[in-house]
Image 1 (cartoon, helix red, strand yellow):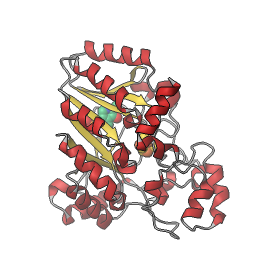
Image 2 (cartoon, rainbow, N blue to C red):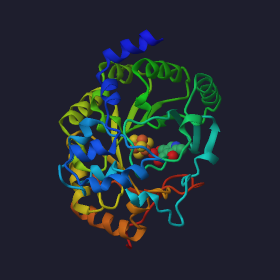
Image 3 (tube, rainbow, N blue to C red):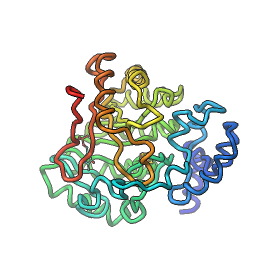
Length: 339
Ligand SMILES: *Cc1c(COP(=O)(O)O)cnc(C)c1O
Ligand code: SF4
């Protein structure tokens, strides 16, 4: 096993990049010429959810700007230690929606499989920042249990691989999982919810593309981009390869104060995504997770923003503004007609 994982490591640049990602706040601040005064708060906030950012993503940040919209998504801040009322550790009711370990079903026809507890970056606003990934991501017997469950329920035609990030699985494990899902005859679509093509584009390997291209299941990739500057040259190339597999590419964003809460910025994001053959899908209101209150944009402000965005873009480039309400049968649209 050890020999094999070393060989894997040599063969896969993305694993080396991941192993070399920035985890120390002092290194990130130093790299960006930022005030070391930010350090003690960063250390304090990193205790509950540690800093993790791939170097390629950090390279897209502007040096000397503590308000950089990419930096704000990853730098632990003292603000995270405040705990205003209304913010909790399980804001979207995931625990209640668990069918078997690692298998969530909230909506008709679609089931979501948490295949990896890990991510290639730690986004400070993440609604799963308190989720016990270690317990809930899949061990081999849990995969078997989840697949049996999916096989028995013919109302499910789409399986969504999520996490964490499903592309933290290596190519072999993913190909293996896809092959087992393909055997379930009522499944038609394979969806991946992943931020990795955006933040670690070297993960778009030939083998991954082949798995998607050759699958009986129609692949849908929902990537996660919040700002146009996240679409660097390498990410654009990775998205092109993924697109060439025949996968439908969609994007979801989270509306984040100080990152993208501006109609012009959101319009630039939609335009940039379209250049990469990715259509905007959802713009999520922040899930009210403890530690992320400083990113929150209230519903009325969000609705006004969407109204401005609609004036700037063709309808197909306007994402659906939604919030997730525990127990509801779909992601709840936030109305912009009477903001
Ligand atoms: C968001 C989500 C989905 C997908 O919803 P769509 O509206 O189809 O994108 C499916 N299952 C769960 C548990 C979800 O949270
Ligand atoms: S990549 Fe997604 S799941 Fe992972 S930390 Fe970021 S928002 Fe959370």
